[in-house]
Image (cartoon, rainbow, N blue to C red):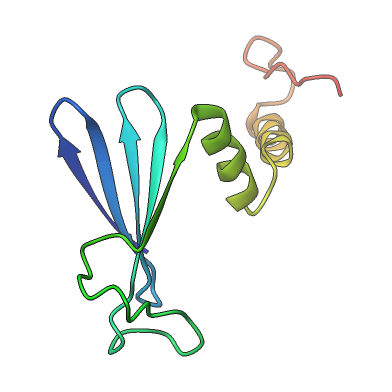
Length: 115
């Protein structure tokens, strides 16, 4: 995936994203914390077979669709896109920290949460 960030002065940051299949979308982070997702049409010559090319949108830089997400909605979407839930990743990190802590070192041992 190729990501290009662009600062929009006084407004936020727009991340232009292209997947390895050539599909394009953008994530605009407003200074308010809200996010806007932009879906762009993929030019027919770069489209992956079986994916929409939106031929009715002749301007490839004009989004074919957009949606605004509040902070909590963006967090929920990010959670869905992760290959592991946060709790599983934290548990793996805690196990790794225990492995890296020298035996008998109680001063530097991590505080493993009780589940």
